[in-house]
Every structure is written in C-alpha cells, then in structure tokens.
Length: 567
Image 1 (tube, rainbow, N blue to C red):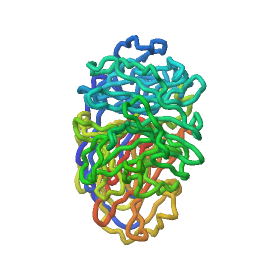
Image 2 (image 1 turned 120 degrees about the horizontal axis):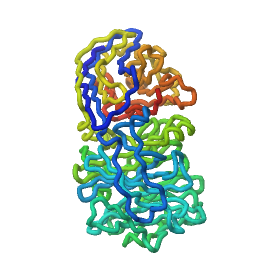
Image 3 (image 1 turned 45 degrees about the vertical axis):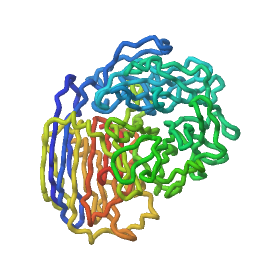
Image 4 (image 1 turned 120 degrees about the vertical axis):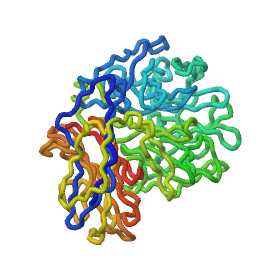
C-alpha cells in the first residue's frame, strides 16, 4: 500500500477552543497478504470563527415568552463542535425551511427553548449566514401562540413564490394534539434577514384527511409548480398500514385540495417523516429548481423511517400525479440511504446562486440523557452537503460544500507511501479533534479477497461482527481517528474488499466500539457497501472530524456514514 498525504491545514480563530489531549489521526492496514499503496491523504484543520454562531438581540415577534439564547463558551465544552451548526444551548433537531433570500442563507430548525431534551413545546429557531459556515442566531421565527399550533410548531419547509417571496408551511400541534398544516409569511419582504413572520389568519390550511389519524400527518415539503399552473405539496403520512406521500394541490397556495391518491405509498415502511421531493439533473452535478420538469431530470423521493432517511430515484408523471421509482423500497438494507449512520430528518433546498442542491441533516447525540442535561445541549446539523445524481443514474452523490475550504489552515501532504500488512502510520502535526482528512488507497492485488454474497448479508451487521480488530484477507484498512497514544480509545473508519457474484465488493464501516472507555455511550457500528469497482478505481475516504462528530464520505461521496463519539 502507498500513502500520499496531500495537505494538513490549520486556522487560528478569534476564540480559543479546547482540544482533546494526546489524540492522533492514524492510517492503519491489516491485510493477510498484499501490500497496499495510499495514493493521497489530505488533512485540513479548521475551526469556525464564531463558535457555531453569534447572537443578536431578540425582537418582539410573538415569541417573547420563550427564553432567549445564552451563549455557552466553547472552553467549557470539550465535546461541542467547532465548525458544525448548533445553537448556543438546548435541544436541536430537524432542519426546517433552508433557503436563500436577498443575499442571505436561512436555516430554521426544531428547537426546545427550555432545555437539552426534546420538549413538549417545540419552536422554529432561525439563523442566517452569508457562506453556510459562519452563522448568526436571530430571534425565534415561529412559536406556539394559536389554537392550531399551541402545543408545538413542528417541521416544515419554505417555498419561494415567484414575485411574492418566501412562504413557510409547517405542522402545528393544535389544542387537541392533532397535527395540522399551517402557513406563515414574512412581515417585511424588504428585510433580507426575514426576522419577523406572521401566521396566516385562516390557519390551518390542511387537516388530517379521512383514514389518516391525527398523529400521522406531518412535515410538508417545499411546494412545486406543476404543468397545469397549480402548486403541489406532499405531507408525510401513515394509513391502512402504508407509509405515504399524501398529495395536496392548490391554485393560490391558500386553498388546498387533497389528491384522490398519494403521490406514492408502500406497505414496506413505517410512517413517513420529513419527506422530500425534488428533481436532479441526469447529466450534470448542478442542481435545478424544485419545479423543473423535463427530460433532463429524474426525481428523488425521500422519506424518514426506522431512524434513517431512505430515498428512491424515479420518474414523476404529473399528468397522472404519480411517482414511478426505478426501484421500490424493499424494507431491507439494500434500500438507498442518504447516510448509513446518525443522520435523520434531512431537508434539501436549491441554491440558485451557485446552481446546486444543498442537503442538511440532523445528527443526534449518542451519550445519555443525563449527559445532555449536564452539558446543556443536544444535537447538531451535519455539514451542508452538495448533492447530485451519480453518473450511473442509480444513486446520489454527496460532498461537503466548497465553502468549508475557507476554514482550512496548515497543510500536510504525503504521497505514495507504501505500507505493509499490519502496519500503522501516524499522521503527525495535526489537531486530531478538528480535521478534514482525505485519503486514497490503491490495492495492487485483489485475488486473495474472500467470497461474499451481498444479497444474504446486512452490511451493518457485517461491520459489527468483523470490526476493525478482526483481520481479513483484504482488510480492514482505513483511518483511526481521535486515537489515544496507546490506542485504548479509537474510532475506526475502514474498508474491506470481498469477491462477489459479479465482481468485487467494497465494504465501508464506521466503528466506534472502542471510541471511549465510558459504558453509557451508544457505540453502534454502521456500515454499507460502496458502488465502485476497485479494479478500475482507487478507494477514497474523506472524514470531517469535529470533537464529537465524524462525517465520512467513501468512494467520492457515494457512501456516507456519520457517527458521534465521546473519547
């Protein structure tokens, strides 16, 4: 094996952040036979300049009865991230209504203003940015104040109406604890920060239809303008033992009529949460507006269930108001996922400034409720990801947005480093708790690979049973992150290669089983196959390490695994 370390980068920020002492980034290789070549490793170190955002003074907007943010200094929080989005304190979950408006990126999100656990009363918090990296926390946008949302303002989306500006659709938990859909409008369209929102006087605009219970009707998507000039939106639902995308249509965005049939439904899933529906170009990495429909696009249907975000690629037929997937959900590990680790309730938006589609996802904690209450916060958002259709047309590709390079500092590079079986190579000179690492592996000999039938195995279970300490013929090889000097604590992101029915298989694993000596932490190992042929292309890995989160992108973003660790 040969190693190439292309870069190591540091940034000295305006705030001092704590480091996990004596932590290392290590490339490790455990092969029975063949040597391996690492073609390239890129390591970038960075930290956000404003400690996940700064706060501005709150305005009177109907949320004045909910406590405001209090900044918690990073020095007090060794597990708190430095360049991922999170509020100064308390509970965060679903990203809501991301958009760009008048030169400003907006992110709304589910937030408990009263504590570090999911609450009986949830609101829409609101932050803005000019680069999707550095954020300013604004006044809360939506709070429970009316009978139709008095018990919480749950998830939803934003849609920009041509010539009229943005509109928010969100789920309210009403006085009867029923889920209903509501609308809110900006008070001042000339304000690029959109600091104040007014709820529509005739809310709710959609209520649970016949056959759908009041607790199974939530999370409206971004709307799209159909061929007949009507707006369409889907709501996540569950009815008659089917998860579904309930379709509503409207001529004026106020009066909505339920379509006779769902846009898509299946008996092979649970209740659909936080659905998303959008077009992707078949021949470009550029994004397209949510309303685009032509021969040059396919459509993505995403649904959240079983604690993961699953998706299908297919064809939208507006004349029939049907979605025809290339491959239906099967209810197995073979279904496509955005991320095979801790990543849920995601939401995309079209960034018209850079012609790209951006994906946000909620990353929850793996420590205990008691830990969350003690540290005073829980949950963060993934790094925003550029998302597009792979050239094969069979899956999506994700990659950290290019703006993250603004945070890169000191650079370390290493090229064509040959390593023997069982060897460990330490990448020196980096701050291991805050890094951007890229590595490329070349294996000259594949004949020794063990046989595996991928249709008969769950890759997550395979990664769990054959963790980073178990030697195979071709693997494990990869990175040991946040490792102590004696390696008693380490989180491994690694690969194994097998011989399959029609060629070679590449398995990617994220193994936190030895990430900490603490017992109360969830140390679930995650895994997935990568759709690459190691005979024709090298195996690449990029990992973003930020104190207690590791986001890993295998095969140039074709497989993603996010994990939380607490060394």
